[in-house]
Amino acid sequence: MMLKKTSRLSLVEQVVMQIESLIEKGHWAIGDKLPPEIELMEEFDVSRNTLREAIRALVHAGLLETKQGSGTIVRSSSSLGAAMERHLEKSNLIETLEVRLALEREAAQLAAIHRNNDDLQQLETCMDQCRDAVQRDAVEDFITADMAFHKAMAKASHNQLLQELYEYMTEPLYASIRKLMITDTPFAYENLIHSELLEAIREQNLEGATKYVNEYILDFKKRLALETKEENS
Image 1 (cartoon, one colour):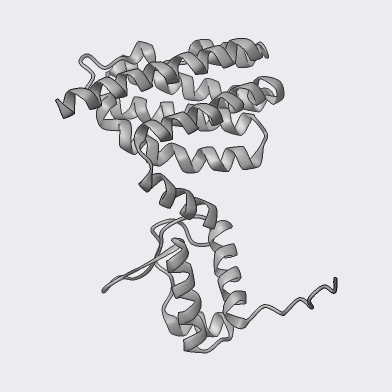
Image 2 (image 1 turned 180 degrees about the vertical axis):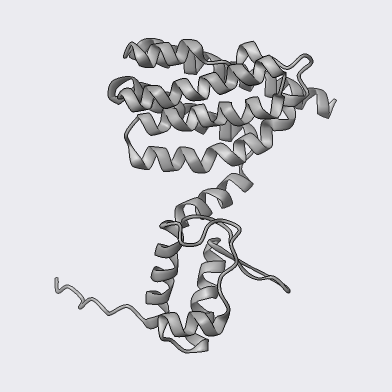
């Protein structure tokens, strides 16, 4: 079998790759407006048609969004993130929690194996912020600190792909379950402070970390299912 000769990237593909790279490197953040067309044309040394075709491709991929009167806005930090967002929009919350359970269980195990002093310090900082929010009865601050704790645990796994997948799942998941968390009366802080999980990671206790994650995610699924049932009844 003869291999086909690899074709060179078109100008449009090159511009797409350059814009995507700039976004991933943080040159433009989510919510930022891209510079005017003429400026981008000069920057990439391409025609208006080439630039517009590249922008359309990135809009279709979910990385950019064109708003009437506002220009072109960065919608996601990577193509992976955009793809994850599209899939999450089509998934129900239970399915998302099930995937998060798989990712978080693996993150906890890997964090217990690979965590270093910097990781433990970051996890401690997040835990302190959780406790401070409890003292002030600041629910929103607690939820933000709790989300930071889980992201720090994923980072402590030292697996870049797992960290990115977890990053893209966490924010939309928290946005979806925030209402459920806040409507708890009183707010169930004691169920969400993960002191035991942090201790398991510190002691490199894989079994303890896994057991803790299984229990609190499954408990949350039960609460969510009950809430959904009550809403539908």
